[in-house]
Amino acid sequence: MEGEGRHAERELARQRIFSFATPIRKRADEHPRRFFRYIHVTIPLLLGTYDANTAPPCGKALLVACLALCPTAVVTRAITAMDSSSEFSYFAYGSNMSVRRLVARLPSARVVTTGFVTGYKLAFDKLSKKDGSGKCDCEHTGNGGDRVYGVIFSVVRGEREALDTFEGAGKGYEPLSVRVETATGGVYALTYVATKKQPGLQPYHWYKQHVLVGAREANLPDDYVRAIEAVVSIDDPDSARTETELRAYSAI
Image (cartoon, rainbow, N blue to C red; front, side, top):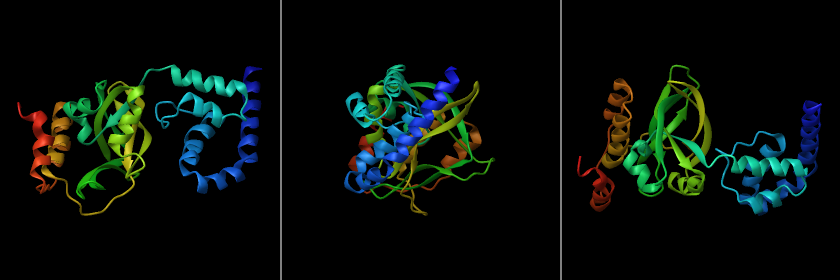
């Protein structure tokens, strides 16, 4: 009976989605940010696929407002899900693998384990909006032989918005839930993939250093680390920025 009830509720949710699909499309032009939350929060909640670990930040008041037309049980389950865990898993594969760099940004971050995602390759062709250099991307290839290694961190949920800001969510990167293979099995974690890429870009020396420090700290496979070492990097014309970025390693 319980299964039948959930099925009926899902069907009702689908009907509600389609019933206000047209006005929502109109709102997409007028309020793109609200539409983004609708796509990534409201619809998954209605269909029972909401994942609080990877959904964009959304306050309870806004969430309830978004779901005003939904069954009360759906809203209740949604808020319970948001509160059920105070932390989320974050998969870092680029400069944020460096513990010192990440903790300086997100004080709560702690290393959980290392792992890799299959069907992706590490690239340095994400165009930096700030300095025009190349940054890391976990580029999807679909090739089962390709892997991107990285570190899984646990981060308190209250720092999710700060992580979005540091990662440039919506400004060159987008959040993505990926399955990470670890020594104890597969787990899902939040990561960020590039949306603004430019082939041929090269990273600054200091950025590559962040990536290498993190890779070495995590004891990633030797051949993977050597591949990062072989990436051609360039001088940053802003020497003050270079000094600032590498200050955390001055005692090494």
